[in-house]
Image (cartoon, rainbow over all chains, first blue to last red; front, side, top):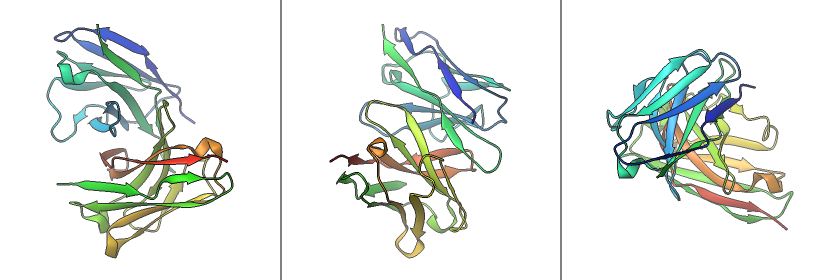
Length: 109
Length: 118
């Protein structure tokens, strides 16, 4: 099983600042790496799929990058609505199994 | 507008059964792969099951294999999760989610809470 480790656990930043979230896999992952945002009491929302593709309606301030075992979600300039928990997720080759990281909370400093 | 609406959650005793439903609209359900993902209270996300677009091929997390069954009724545009032999550790909010390219989940329902407790 591929384990995804996200860091940091909590990121304390101010609106307007840049956020850099890390997701590290226990072994090399193909390009099947996605990022989700979840706010309290809400379902997750897909932000990025296949490493760097923004999902429908996602603002350009969200970007994804990386390869192999190291992946990054960057929020270029935090808006008030961006304070939330972010999860990375990968899919193993075949048969498909999907695993999530434990999450990074982005909180207001 | 895509809508996924789960129902069927509730309180059940250990060893009991429950069937969750997910009514869909705004998607071409008959050619969509669908998933169930759960989230224990205060915890992270765990993928549970996947039904491919063919409506026949299924995949399960090891934690539920042999106990849970994912299925669909295309005429009702509804996804199901039959859960048997429930355990305390199955307590979670269960989300249905639409598959995107067999790599991620692009639309989610609001979730339904399942509590396994005596």
